[in-house]
Length: 427
View (cartoon, rainbow, N blue to C red):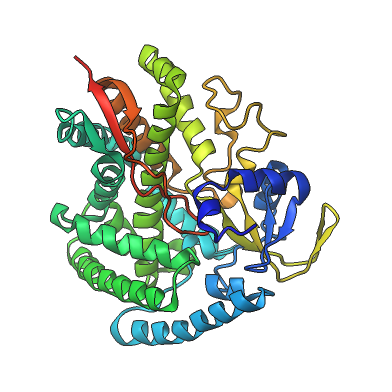
């Protein structure tokens, strides 16, 4: 079993089932990480940040994979480590060396920075975006509704959250294609599946993004406005008694705004429509009573598709779990997607159930102090995205022979490459 295999990458759920039942603490021979797959184990780990702290403060993703990896993978990762030296020099010479992002910080730094983001993503600001999100969703559908078919990922799932977060960052519409290319490169780089050459190219693209956003930072310092990015640039982190540095801003802009704020929502929008096209009963329920069923459907999409498949933590002490000893300093992969289909937690875990109790009990957004700060905005985008489709389309299907259901190669995220759908427009 390997999560680096394309077949497992495309459909990991059989592997998750085997691990939950037979090896709930599984040491991945490729990466050396200890993988947890049961819901209650992940919940306990996420809430125990003293024992399972964030890894980003000390170890990079490449270094994490080097720990006790098999010889072939270790050689590959050592080559990556050498490339990382080149990459660091590139950042020092042409860009800004990254700082730990919000998700990679531990207390007390994490909560100090979290307060700034909580203010930037305050409920009033999120709710004020509702008319913009709803209008944008319908404008996107306007562009293909008369065709009776579309490639849903590129024509809807990508632009909807990307334009929303770009509005909050003050980016121009004409810059969207290159911003998407930059975020794709960033996502691929953290996904542990690039060659050294690909990793170097992704870093070069990230530096292009830094140079673009640096101009925006400097403009916002001169002329603050009401955007989310302006808040991040100009607000002081109270406990630090200072504003964010350029290095910190560059890390947060790409990781927590454009990737965290757009990429994961894109993946949920893509996966959700694939689920709907395969489940006529769910589609009929949404058409009959969208007011009742849309919000539960959003939660089921997040649970079933889990755009973030896993994230790493580290052990601060030796941990004994299911008869396996996890030594202090080990990297632990928390497989959210496996936990979200755990039959010990969910009845009929692989199916859409719009009447589940506690529909928000899934772990798609994490849990505890590191719970995803963009979750409220993501839920609104998903709600209005699916709402527009339900209102504008009477019937939906997958176009036969047009889909291979392949996913981007990524150890951490789940991103459908394309989804060709046909539909009958509402009269």
